[in-house]
Image (cartoon, rainbow, N blue to C red; front, side):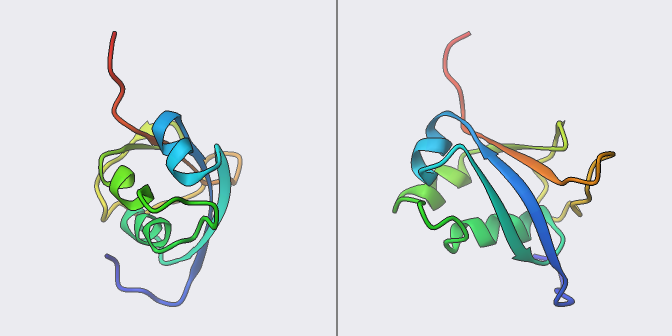
Length: 98
């Protein structure tokens, strides 16, 4: 993860399909320490969403992510708000079918 400076970041996280089921919600604002995708994922795995079920961390490891509509799966990627000033992260589990 990143070297943390104590900075807090806020992200509007949207969960889809199996991820929504695992986290018990389709959307949640997450406050986390750090600035990278890995920092956010660590916070999510550690219980940042109170409604998350016991398998949420396992589901999260299988997901891909969109940061402000752009695909990003590098845990060291620094997260920044989009043009509207909001940081949005979509959590997408693997989808089957076509």
